[in-house]
Length: 154
Image (cartoon, rainbow, N blue to C red; front, side, top):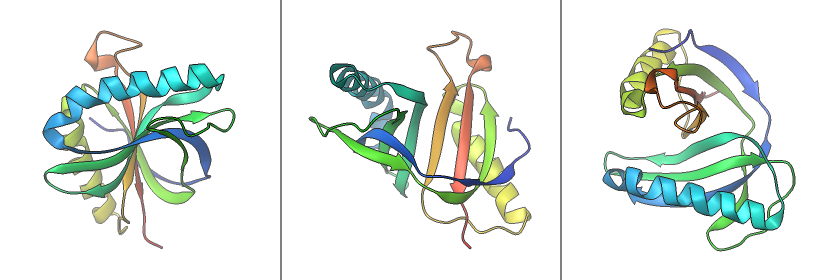
């Protein structure tokens, strides 16, 4: 389900983001159109993405996702509509890769969280997923790869 986790230090990476605060039940309806909006804005501004899409969750609750949908960029993006400049933060994180369909992500996060605790780490606020391989690359969900990143307390 998940690859062997590792502890890594990330550096801040510039990104273009759209902040979404939505009920969990709305995720599948709103995610795709937000991706289209983000990519269209980058194209209009002549800014190239330098990596896959990510979702940087800022606050977690049982009912609501509060996150930035984004992509790393090669040049600064100008605020336009819902698109704004942002970044993936510099942090000490536990990282793993989940293989499989997006419906399996909650279970993967559970296994990953258990590993973090069992290995003497304490999770900090927030987390991010990087959609390294998804439906744009393969119609087979078994081929999909999602990088899971959980910041750790010092």
